[in-house]
Length: 437
Image (tube, rainbow, N blue to C red; front, side, top):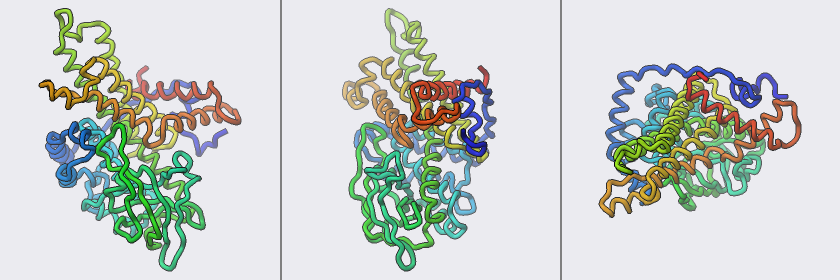
């Protein structure tokens, strides 16, 4: 049975089939400063062409420069080190705004925040004083744990950190590293003599290279690649935590990344809802607006429910993180619900637009129509089911947790998976309803 210290009160209750109440967190009213920041950000985002980013699989340098000036990359950096020092709640609001315009662009912002979380968790005062001002000034960062043979199983990491005079020499290759091709600072998990360890690596160091930029079905515009380390020297002063802490810190970074998936999903779902409402209001069938059709109205209502659930999950996970109560089991529930909800919302929006939903925005534009990129959002939403821990990996972990809570042993069975799936659904319902059920 899980120990008391390992318990996640809400997640465990849901996995055991209980029906707890969840109150919607009372988010603080945006400060005057935050309102000014949001206004500046919205001006930048109004000029972002999500279709062009998707088509070219690149974010224009001018867009990144504008986001940097607006403060999007220093939102979570403490004020003492030149950042804006904003809460997770404010950060989630920003991520949802960015994701609504381009989910690939949002990946730049969410990945940058991981370095801040790692430095807060394991950085010394000297490391924070050295690195946080650089991040606040505009240096981009990446987190590198995944390898070709070490995806969901960090125990298989083969990148090595060999002690040498004054520090370590790192060798290995990291796969699918978001922000990797553009980052100045890469937080690398490698195997030292005392176990896995985490290092802040200067990407300009000799022996560090970007071997390849990866391309994907969706989330286009994110910078993701294969990183190669060949005898890269890292001073001992840039090891975060002790040898042996790498797995714990790496999992903490993944957990932090999962918390932002709800915000990204919320941005996608809101856009799916917006374009669906606009389209069904304008489109006529049988002499009346399409939204008067009972089947269409049912789908629109489902879209509303999905967006409400995502808003509730995003608000709750942000509030829990701000209170220091974020845990791996609830983050798994949140991520699974968010990814599934975004996928369903994007699929509904595409279906409601019919052939136009399946047609690309560029093709619509070429025919003289105002484009709406329903198919792009479907591709983007599909990516959320793979990043920050795949659906299969997290579902399996929750099923194993359900089995342990019930006193079972061995591999989870179909009943355990059913309890995990029910817990995910119930979690979204509770958060979306503000605990009223």
